Structure formats: structure tokens, C-alpha cells
Image (tube, one colour):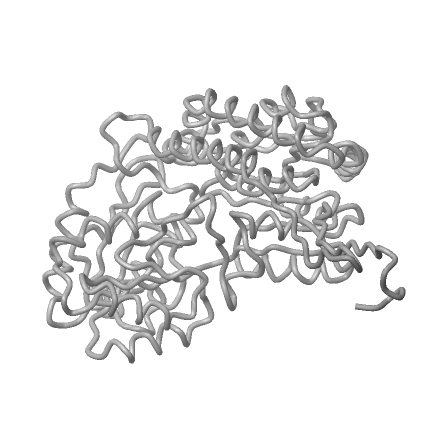
Length: 472
């Protein structure tokens, strides 16, 4: 497949293999973007932005049209995701449709005038101005959704974009570039592919006025340092070692299914999923047993299979990381009450794993495993647990589970996180802001807040001649 630069398909100077994680075979090849081609993409985006920024109604119409096109292409994108990412067809379809939903939201959300003053003396209002070119860098876990999470608000705000997907999952984003090129003016959306070197070129490039990055903490810090040299704005959505805390009045049978999928959706490969579960000793065995029963009946296999519930992990490095963390936990005293080992075959499959007897200090508890293994930690004092959770470096999300909503809400408000859920986890909405604190990120995405984060503020002050210049 080809990159999209200035509305045209562009081949690379070289190509790299994209491996199907379910088979280990090469699924496709993607172009390696050269420095000169990146310059072309940035120049095309910069020139296109001069016209794109002028007509908001036109932008809204194009986003609505693109939303419909993505919805139509959902089955095709789902099949690409199954082959390059290892997720099931159903999950890939949901991901594509969520991208269409984000486009639809930003096509229709209203941006009311923000008038500060309007009297006989003066009129003062806030004008939201586009930044210019936005450089987007997306991860491999949900590449289609992430592309639209960044693209939709950026375009609605009047910016243009150059987007780089992960080299593990570039094909779906290249296809999105092709679809968009039939709807958007040339240069408004450009897709380039390559490795880490390309990402560094993008963050150092003089044209973008904002970097929107989703990925690891380590890479996010590099992006932040690079952007600081040119005072570029950044949105960084980084790691999240989310904790779920079950209270002593919860019914294990009632919460088990929601807890399980809050941790194992997308094979556990999501920044906002449950990564560690704290359960009071009084109901600990019941929760572990209920989760283990669910894990044992999950069908792991071919992402294209109709009965499959969990496909392959997205790539071999992630498979090896999860395997290593589980092995470390077992050696450190944890017990796998379900799973605990890879599934045989040429691909990178791993059994959904419940780890009982886990404790703080184990790597799988303290680090973000980002895979299908859930450590369950017993506790005695909920206030102590909240203090321990808050002492960590991550602060993306967290949840409290209890039938007593008032009690759970009061405890949830004490979590030092960007999003606190009660009796659910990993629930996102187009109209709700999303972001983390501490090492989990900078800035917000989604809703009008995400839209405003992609614009600058201009104060327009009109003196009506009845006050002295400069007077308030």
C-alpha cells in the first residue's frame, strides 16, 4: 500500500514487513518514508491549512461524509486489523465504528460564542484559532480508533494533520488515508509510515505546531523534550497502570463479568484497562474463583474465527513481555488459577490469566503489563490501598466496585487519576474529556475540551467609543 501525501498515493524509498501475529507470516509491506517525503507531507499540510481553516461549515460537512465512508468500510478495516493486529473481527468492527462515531461527533458538536463582555462600552469575546499543522503519532493497540481520536478534533478545529501509525500496524491507517483522500482536500490529511526514526523527524520538524502522541512513557518523554526545543504544544496520552478496588459489600458473582472484560478487552492491550485488582480478604476467594471460571471458558484462537473471543497478542515483543511478567510473578509466589502459559502454535497467543496471591512489589503489579494477565491482590484496609495506588507514578484511570454508590463515589474521588469509574472501567465517551495525571500524560482528548486543546485563544476586544482606550 502507499502513503498519502498531498492527496496522492506515494511509494516509499524502501519497504518493511508487517507480520500477522496470529500466524507469524508476513501479511503485507508498508513504505519507509524518507526525510524528503516527510518534508513534502508537512509542506502539503501547511499549504492546505490556509484554505481549510476558513470555512467551518465545509469542514463539518467533510467530517460527516468521512464518518459515513468509514462506517461503510468497517468490515474491510476489521479484516485488516485481524491480520495486522490479531484482534477478532467483531472487535475490529467495533473499533472502526468508534472512529466513525468520533468523526460524527466532531462534525456536529456546536462551538458557542464565548462572550466575556457586551455593553455600551465594549464587546469582548474569545476566538478559538487553529494551530496549523498537527503531527499525530499513534500506537499499535487500537490503531484505527486512535487515528480518528486525533484526526477528527484536529480537522474540526481548522488544523491539518500528518499522521504516523505504529510500524506494527500501519496497513489500516494507510487504508484510512486512501479513504480520506477521496473526501478531504489534498494535503488536509497525510499518512506517512516508518520506524522510530520517522517519529523523531516529525517531532523535530519545524512545521507542526502541535504533537499529539499516544504511546509509552519513555517515548513520550522523548517527544516532550523534542517539542520543547521549538515550544510546540503537546498532548501526551501515555501509560496507565489502572487499579480496580472492590469493596467488602460487593457480590463476586455480580461483578465478575464486568471486572473480567474491564481487564481483558482487546487482550488486555489498552491503556485504560484494569491492570491490577485489589479485593478485600473477606470476599477474595469468591472473586478469584468467579474470574477464573470466566477465563477458563474464553475461546482463544484465530482472529478470523466466528467463535473466537480473544485473538493473538499484537506482536511478539508484547507477547514476550507478558510471558516474562507472568513467569516472574509465579516465581515470586503468585498462583495462576487460570491460564498462566502461552497457547501453542506459530502465532503469539496467550491464555487469559488470573494471578492469585499477587502483592505490591511484584513487577506485574507495579508495571503496566498491557496484556491478558490480571494480578489479584488481597487487602485489609481500603484507605491504605488508595494511598498505595496514589503513591504510584501513573494516574490514567481507576475504579471502585460496590452496590453503595455514595460510598464508592466518595472513595473514587480520592483516586489521583484522570478518570474515576464506579462499577465500570474503561468506559469512554465522545463528549467526555480523557487524559491522565503524573506519568500518564499531559493534556486532554475528546469532547469540547479536546477540541479546545487543538486551538489557541485570541481575545477580540472591540471598543465602542464610550470608554477610553485600554479602559476596562
